[in-house]
Image 1 (tube, rainbow, N blue to C red):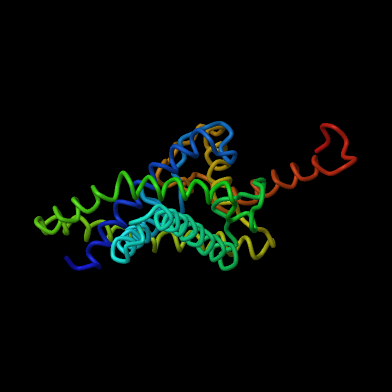
Image 2: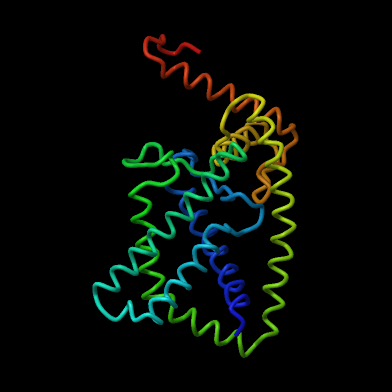
Length: 253
């Protein structure tokens, strides 16, 4: 089967799986969502996170490399392969994070409170999580991935679904890029970095207080202009920073 089609299929599956994983994480474990609401995760509108799709493609290619070179034939080689998976996923996470931070003034995740973090974009704890996910993929998922790819080879009509996914995904990217351009303009004008997930949670809280309709897949859609939500979120952060300053009077705003 064409390698491009294989990777397209894996990107599709990985993006969907990553969306589910991030949805659950943000619901139950994320500090950016203290009220534990269901918030659509990631950069895009649809139910997919491209970072995980890219990561699954990389894990698949590394698995192929390990099998082709015999690296997985010994305990030491296997350990090296799993370490390479963890490092590769960490590098992907860092590249995605630094591009968004430097070019768009957006921060989709923040590990600043974690030990050993680098610019709040990567840290040893989450590199360990990537290593665990890589090991889980290699031992429990990769054999089924190969079977699924063989099934796809025998049922090429399913490639229509992949084509449809990438068509919708492309439209989503255009829409999301337009939205991010507005966020970037506000960030540059006010010399701030916008925390994407915090902003989503802030808009949702504002909508709940105003009893507005909540748009799960389009969290930035609101009866109030986006600029108003951005200004409100910035004012809230300024108040919080003021309270945290040494010597600030208790309860003073």
